Image (cartoon, rainbow, N blue to C red):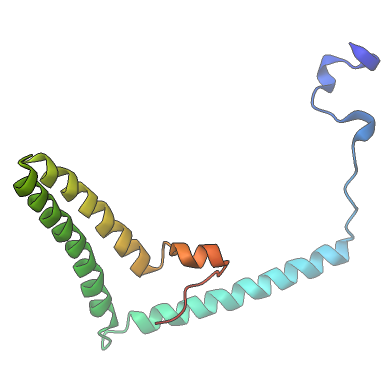
Amino acid sequence: MTEGRRPDDAGRAGREETQRPAFKDDELERRRRELDAALASRSRQQEAESRRAASPGSAAGFATALKLSSEFIAGILVGTAIGWLIDKLAGTSPWGMIIFLLLGFGAGVLNVLRSAGLVAERSLRSNGAETPPDE
């Protein structure tokens, strides 16, 4: 082996190995306290939002469910209609309807995920925005 290295030295950088800067205990403690405070405030905000959304007198939950389900069903219906139209024009029954039904299902799922805020829209990601604007 070159330079006197043994097989158990595999993966080590040798002379070029850089050492990490030593952090002092008080600096690490300060950073930990800041992180604890940020997490505590965020969890309090999330609890307050969940209590507001889950209140029995609020119709927000029903409205959200109706919106998400209608977007999902609309995607499936549009895909099925396009597939049926292609089948009638091209005479490829039932393949156009099957393919576009599956595409409509995928589009419906994507619409639901976008509306729920789980998937960011492409324009927001390309602009570097982290959160979508409020509607």
